[in-house]
Length: 629
Image 1 (cartoon, rainbow, N blue to C red):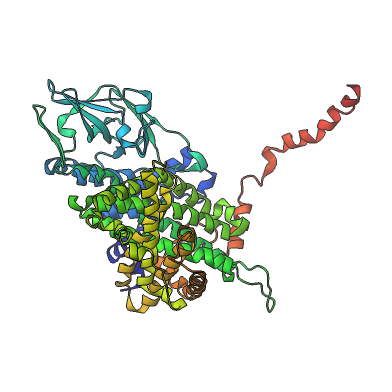
Image 2 (tube, rainbow, N blue to C red; image 1 turned 90 degrees about the horizontal axis):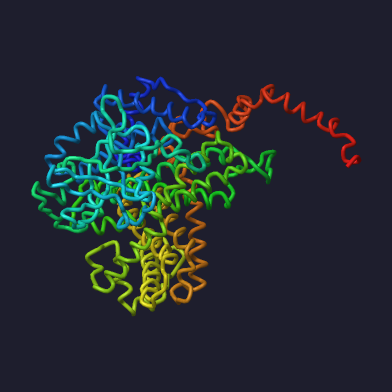
C-alpha cells in the first residue's frame, strides 16, 4: 500500500484518480481564473455552470454520487450548490426512508430529476432542536400533512441549496396528530414546479443574501415560510416512525433515532475539513520552503520553514489535518453501516469530532496564513478564502459551546447510572471511579517514555477524567457549566482522535510506518503540551516530567521534518485545488504575486483620474476662506 492510499483510502484514491483522468480527457469549459474579481452573482453563476458540466460528466461516465461530490471538491474550491442534493439530501433519504419510499424517491434524486436540501434550522432556533416551531399537522379528512410556519422565528433559515436550486426539501417539523404533539419528524416537501421551477403555492422562499467575509458566496442559502402547505401523508419519512391512514402513530423502537440526521451530517465534516486544512498547510509549506529571511549564511538567508517558530506551528497542524482525514473516513464508514444500538456512542463521537475539527481547523488555517507573513493576506495566496469557508463551521450544525453540553450531559447521565461501559467514548469515567489510579503520579522513566502509546493514552485519559470530575462537581453544585464544558469536550475528542489514530497506525504501509508513528507522536504530545493547565492542582505531572515532555516534543518535530514532503506528495493536491499563487509549477511565489499585481483592474486608473485631479484643485477653491470666517 502506498502512503497516498493510506491517507486517502484505496477506494477514495482510485476514485480520485478516475476523476482526474476524466477531467484531463473532458476539460471543464467554464473557467474562472480570478474569482476574487467577480461579484457574488457572477461567481455563483460560474460555479453553477461548472456544477452542471460535472453533472453531465457524471451521467456520461456513469459516476456514482460520491464521484460527483469528489469532482466538485476538485473543480470548485468553494461550496457547490448542487452538493447539498448528494451530500445531505440523498444520504438522509437512504438513512430515514422506508424501503418503499426509497425505491420511489432515491432514483429521482440520484438522476437529478429532483434536487433536494435539508431544512432544519429556523430563524429562532438552531442548536436547540426541541425549540423548532414549524408544525406538521395530520388532516385525517384528506390524508394530508399540513405544514405551517406560525411565527416569524419559525422561518427556515440557512438552508443550503434552497435559495435558487432546490425543488424539494427535507423539512424538520413538529408532528401533531389529533391535537397531540409527537415531536420532530422529517417530511419531504416539494417547493418548486419541476417544469417551470416556479415556487408552488403556500410556500415562500428567499435567497438569504451575502454572508460575512464572503463566506459561502457560491451557496444559495435560503429562507422559507409555509402557509398551510399540504403534502401527502406518505411523504413523512418512515424508516423509524410512521403514521397510518387512520391516524395511528407508530413510534420508533429506539428513541435515539433522532440523532440520525445530525450524525450523518457531522460524520462528513472531519474528513472534509481535514482536506481543506491540509490544502492550507500545503500552501504555507510551499511558500515557507521558498521564502528566505534573516541569518544569511554563505550569501543565502535562512529558509523560513527552518525556524522553530514556523515548524512548531505548521507541523502539528499538518498532523491534525491528516488525523481529521483518517479518523473522519473511519467515522463515515461507521455511519454508512449504521446500527441503531451503536447510535449514542457514534453520536458522542461525531459531536466531539465536529467540535474539535472545526476549532482546530479554523485556527490552523489562520496559522498557515500567518506563517506566510504579509503576503499570506493576499487573496491570490488562497488562504483567506479557505479561512472564510471554514470559520462558520464552528457554528453551523451546532454551535461548539452548545454542542459541548451534549458531551457534558452524557458524562453526567452515565456517571450517575454507572453505565459508561455501554458507551466506549466515555471510557475515561471508569478511570475516574478508580481513586487509587487518580491519585497516582505519572512517573515516567525517561524522555522516550512519552513515545510509548500506553503513556500517551494514560495522560490523555487522565486529563479527560480530571475535566469530567470538575464538570460533575460543578453540576452537582448548580453552577453554569456552559463555558467550562467546552474544555471537557475538546479533551474528550483528543482522546477519540488519538485512539483512532493509534488503530490506524497498525494499517500503515511498512515503508512509511516511521512517518505515521512520528505523526501520531507529534499529535499526542502537542495535544498534551497545549493543555497542561488541566493538570493544575494535581500531582500527576512533576516539573521534570514536563521538561522531559518538551524535550521529546522538540525531538519529534525534528524527526517529523524528514517526512513532511512525502506526506505532501501523498496528498497530491492539484494546482486547481490549491488555487494559490504560492503553489504553481510554472511560477515562483514572487513571480505569481507580481503577475497578480500587473493584472489588477485598478492599475489602469483613468476611470478615477478626473476625481483625483479635482481633489488637487480644491485648495484653490477655498484659498483664503478660513481667514474670511
